Amino acid sequence: MAITQALVETDRRMLSEDFEAVVHTHQQRIFRILMMLLRDPDEADALTQECFLRAYARRAGFRGEAAVGTWLVRIAVNLAQDQLKSRRNAFWRRLLRGKELEEQTVADGRRSPEDAFVARERAATLWAVVERLPVRQRTVFTLRFAEEMQIGEIAQAMKLREGTVKAHLSSAVQAVRKEMRDD
Amino acid sequence: MKKNGFDFAGERQFESDLEEFHASALTGTERPEAFWAEQRRLVMARVGQAQTAFPFKPALAWGMAAVIVLAAVGSWMEGPRALPAPDFAAGYDDDLLGDVKRLTDTQMPLALQPAMVLVDEIKAGLRAETGKPLR
Image (tube, rainbow over all chains, first blue to last red; front, side):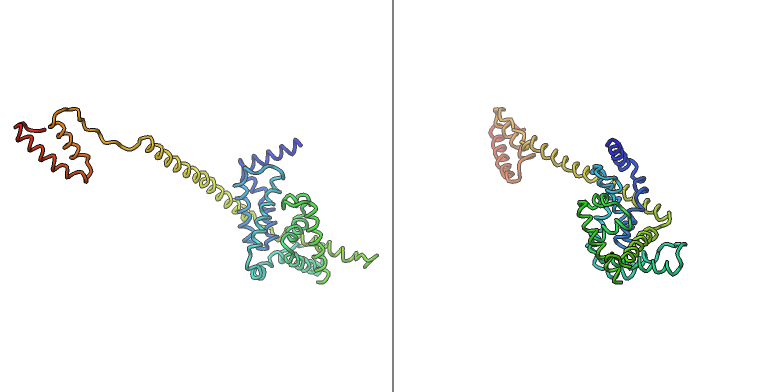
């Protein structure tokens, strides 16, 4: 308890005294999450900046209920969900720039080029399937499997109960599994 | 390969797909250090703007409100500005007329200026009666 309190105090002090260090520590993760949810590097970059600005503006309201990293993820997820809701030209965006994630895949020396190609193709299909999920399911699925966050942390980041997160995740996994099997 | 209705091969494939999904998320969002440095610079520049912009607005609003309140209180305390009362205790007609003339010359509103004509006539009459010049 004392350790948690000390961590909260450290987070709070860093937010007000050394905000650049907070940005430095968390910017890659926030950008990654936004990029995975939005599939658009320019939007992800702009919203990463917006996320830190909002955090700075609201730093006095940081009560330490969650780690500062989780608090930032919550701001980022809200920004992404707002952005997804307001998107009018999603189809054209996807068509023009959404291939970036699929094209940049892991170079794995242990696999044959053919296996690597097949794996890449399947990952691209999986991204496309995830993109068709409802926003909450997509967010939960992405945070769990792409960002490898724990259920509890996802619940804190999305201000949901753990049970609700599990339900969304289960629906998402079922839908993705079915689509991947049919593919 | 299904056993008791469970598709082990399909499940292994799905796990493998999820691993690839995670790996592509990491590599797909990799950026050079210059990108992160520029992003940090932009964030801190905007934070700097926010620092100067935000405290200024409430301060300006409070300042303006204070000036308005002070002006209102000041005018209320001062009350309506009274004209200096002429000294009617002089006792002499010519003194009284002199006071009236001074008042009409200096502070009387335009509507009362015709009274000046009357004052001048009275003065002329008095001068003729007493032979004494008026002030």
